[in-house]
Length: 400
Ligand code: CTP
Image (cartoon, rainbow, N blue to C red; front, side, top):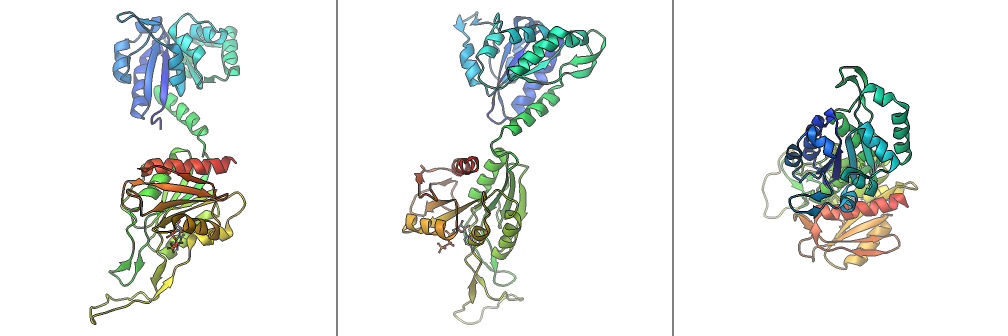
C-alpha cells in the first residue's frame, strides 16, 4: 500500500509514543520509507535507538547532530515527505502547530512541509475537551491538516474517555484510505486483456502464439496501483497479478475473449487491449484426436472477430480504447491504419525489428501514436515502466 511512499513521522512527548514502534514497523512492512523526528520530550518515552532500528534511518531530535555538528535540514525533510504524520500529537505541540511556533525541529519540519499533514492527538480527556484544544484542532483543520481522531478508553491518568491515540493498525487503515482517495484512477473501471488465445484443432492441439501476457499483466498491476478497478481478461498465461484487487477472468479462445470483452466493456471507462488474439480459428474442431495419415494435411480456418474493432464500433462518448500493434515492416503506417480503422484513442506500436521488444522478453520499446497523430517514442524499458507510460497516457485522456 505505501510502496515507495516517503513518510516523516513526528513523535511528541506522550506515553502513547510507545505505540510509535509498531506504527513504524507496520509502515516499513507495507513498503514505506520512514524518517522519524522526535521532540526532546519524546525521547524520554521511547528511545531514538528503537525507532532508528525499526525505521532503518537515523532519528532526528535537534537542529544539529551533536557528534558530527551536522545541520539537520528541515526544509529538505519537508520536501522529501509524501506524508507528514504527527503521532502522538500532544496538546502542547498541537497548540504550537496551530500558532506557527517553531522551537524544535519537528515544528520547523511542519512549517516547511509541502505534503499533506496528519495529526493523531494523544492526551487526557479533559485536555482533549478543553476549548483551547478544540480551537487549535479546528484551526489546524482549517489549514488543511487532517485529524486522525483519538479513541475512547482507559487513559494514562486512569480516567476513561476520549483522548487515546488511535492504534497503529487504525492509523495505517486511515492513511491507506486517504492514499486511495487521492489516487488518479480511483473509482474508474478499466478493462485489460493479456496473453495469447488458443484456437482448438482437436482435443490435444491448438493454434496459438508466443505471447507471454507479461505486458498486459504489468498494465493491469499498474492501473490497480493507481486506484482503478481492474478486470483482466487473460488468455492462457502463466503470469500472476501482483495486485490482489484485480478481478481476473480466464478465457481460452478468441470467441471467449470477445464475449467477455463485449460484456465488461459496457461498464468500463477504458479498455487496453494488449492480448495477442488469434486472427484465424479452425472452421471445425475435431471431436477425436486427428490421426496421422497422409504426408500433408491442411485445416480450414476462418477469420475471428476483431475484438477491438467490435468495441470501437460500440464505443460511447467518454470511453477510451487502446490497442497494440506488433509490426515487422511499415510499422508507423500500419499502426496508424489500425488506430483509425478500429476507432482507438491511441495505439501502442512495437516493432519486432527493435531488440528487446516483443512477446517473451521482460523489456519493450514502444511508440505511442494518438488520434491527432502525435507520436511519442520511448526508450527500451522494462515492461513495468512501459506500463507506467501507457497508464499516464490513459490518465491524461481521462482528465481531459
Ligand atoms: N486484436 C483484436 N482482435 C483480433 C485481433 C487483434 O482485438 N481478432 C487487437 C489486438 O489485441 C491488438 C490490435 O488488435 O490490440 C492489433 O493487433 P495486431 O495483431 O497487431 O493486428 P491485426 O489487427 O490482427 O492485423 P495484422 O495481424 O494483419 O497485423
